Length: 285
Length: 339
Image (tube, rainbow over all chains, first blue to last red; front, side, top):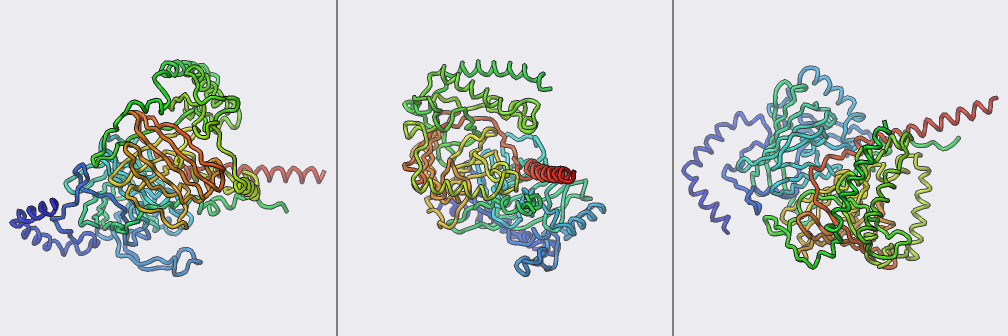
């Protein structure tokens, strides 16, 4: 009730400048047309419900609804990389989530990405049940839960039980390199801004062999755009691999099922034969 | 190398044991403190606040050692028991041996005595039955235990395949997350984060996370079975009560099976202590439920990323080694035969 009153008042106060803002957004539309749908403007007036300590409330179970894990760049549909899976494992087409369409690789890095793609069945860390890294964990396709407290915001991913701790206080540099990086966060109005460094060079950005080095620096912006969607904007910087910083954008959708929960996906068990099967003791001849 | 280390280690031990003795009177059995009411600080939404970094590392065994007949040691006896346990722990590997290269508990700070651990006058974590021992198995429990041993045998020797190895060496799961949450020999560290309706417990070992829902939802279908089960919680005054079922039985706790129900009670006793009680109820396996009591002590963060599987060169290398050894033996046998 109080919230509704507040929103009413806010809307009334904003009526004076809301129109010019909308006009401005409309004017930008042609330029935005090439960028992903996530950038379709959320109502600029959207103000997320608050947590008990007064921050925008991002708590909940979220998931992307796109093909970014197959390839963050635009791609046509294609056959399954594993023949036996037929149409069930085939690659759905995707419009891409990279701002401007193409990742600005350094020439040698683009070559490496192509080699990665060619050898993806052997090299993709996802196949081996390795921690997915950032930002891949976000759009890998499985749900993740945001658990928000004043000091720490946890991102708990279903895939491989990957965990990120976002330090909102007591922030330090990364004490060691890791798969999921070291994340410090801050609030900028409605937006949770997460700055992550301290990565190793072992995770990929998708199944198409897009990759990064240990110089990766990721800045993510989680902006609530409605009660059940968040706009997720990512800036990727890695001077060893890319010629300039570049961006991705996509919406996150909230699970609204009353019984939604993150379930175990302890995939180590599912890949042991793949990784170690050739080392199995052979029966005596 | 080892020898130059030893004196330092000894000196460190002595200091540590001195400190142990000094704080023993202050440290105590959790339940002894219950007469002094402590009200935990509150989260912004009014839950008792269990948040922060904790450890349940302890030298107190789950079961009472044979020959010990009382539930509580005197502080002097407890000190002696810890001293003995520290000696045993560092004697796990012999300096200069192959085993020592892999796991020198003292050198890498893996033994409990080099970090904070829960001091306890109890002779066992088990408080019920009063014997401090796990109760006898049911007939069905005996049958299932024998069956499990058979199944394991079918997998062959430990180094025959990844699957025949131990769960922790396969980086599948360790003792930390439970439930019940048990001291994991090293890195027994946890982080608790609360948001409205949720308590999250992150275990350092293999970054296992328990998400305990507090909204009163029922357990999922019995077909949903997990290594850590499915946990539902509620507040009983100052105490977080968590009930867990839907286990898959693949990570038996002291021989438990898939019908296991674990009831845990977390109560903050002071700024730096959470009392941790649990009851094990698995009527398929045991003739009666049994209960234990431990504590979590406040420690410092952060929880580091324990990418166990990703760096599991140990499992890979031991399998390679075992196959090479077989090859060597086969060649030797062939040579002998041809002579």
